[in-house]
Length: 238
Ligand code: CA
Image (spheres, rainbow, N blue to C red):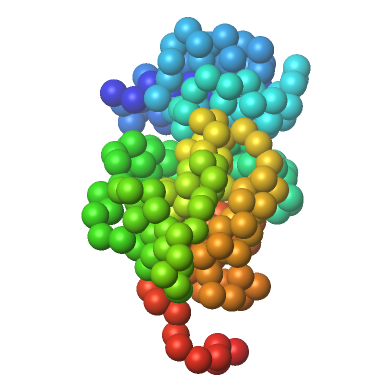
């Protein structure tokens, strides 16, 4: 059974959520204010949090920050605010997904299941990387933590390794900014700008043309993706 904490101050929505979640065998705890949500999370240790952004006593983003101080529980945000910048702000704060009001119950339930599945598979270690990974002119050995480029050793900082490893262990997969932040700094709170800084440094050290990366790719506003392989010989086609 999945324990879910539902944080919502509108009685009708709260009631509908409670009925529908219980019908799907969720164990439901509820809170109507941010301060109660934080207390309830500490008390119930939920498997999943569904969080309304507009609460009477605080902004839902502050609830996310409060939770991310000590737990990696998946958080799905419910909000009437639809701007892209708002979504990015909430995901950067450490939420796992964002559902816009008004929402369909079926879609919301599907998103909750998806977030749980993602979290369950993320909890398993990535495929062990035995063979060295080729990034254009560079070869990265994750076992010995060494990098060679054109026959010479390249030194990466501890943070650069921490950013690079999750990407290399999941080739071709989009790794979201919150997930990368939490892998590197232990919590999904923080500034995507710091990640951009380290990714830029990794490109300078590893990519043939850091200004036009072909292996360490940015998915704008969402995350990063590692595409393996040796760089094509000769000038780039575009
Ligand atoms: Ca509200």
